Image (cartoon, rainbow, N blue to C red):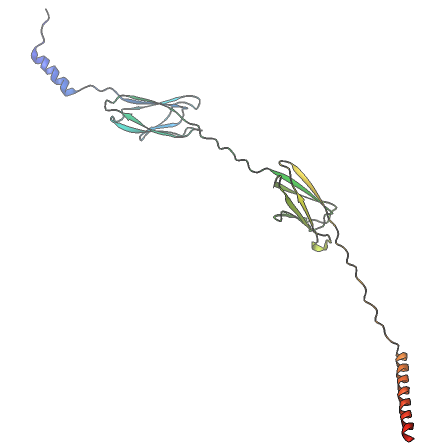
Length: 243
């Protein structure tokens, strides 16, 4: 026959259980991150996530405050964007598990610029100190002596559009006419242009006309004849008065 538990002992056990309250289990916030190797923070508690970029890392936080939100952050994962969210732990302090898949950092796509090409210019002849300009903006000067052909190159020239080549070879008494030529280059290619300089036209000069002079002897004859004529007129008038 079973011996009944004394009432006093039973009451004592109930009282002790009421004072002690419920026994609480340990609470965890378990975070799985793919890929791993970054840093995981729950509020201010930060830890390096176990794992590699090829796998999933796992990080556990013990006994967080219950009945509140916690800030969850993941950062410093090479090639992946940082992650921020909140984790709520309820009033019953139930453990929480969260799985995070990080997003790769967007790859910047280089914006292709307008097509360009290279312009190779040959100038014949190549006078010393001659200057060649592309669109009156980029200019090159032949600093060396005069040569049969002078070559200059312009890089990164916008393709499939007209450009103006101009050559000034009249400086330093080179004696060539300025030259202008329209060119266009092909994209991603070397386009050549040749400019043949023309010498300056020679200006014909007319020698001054020789001055004409009358010999001194001729002047004396004219004066003598004039004087003789005047004397004859005076004599004739004298005779008319005597009559």
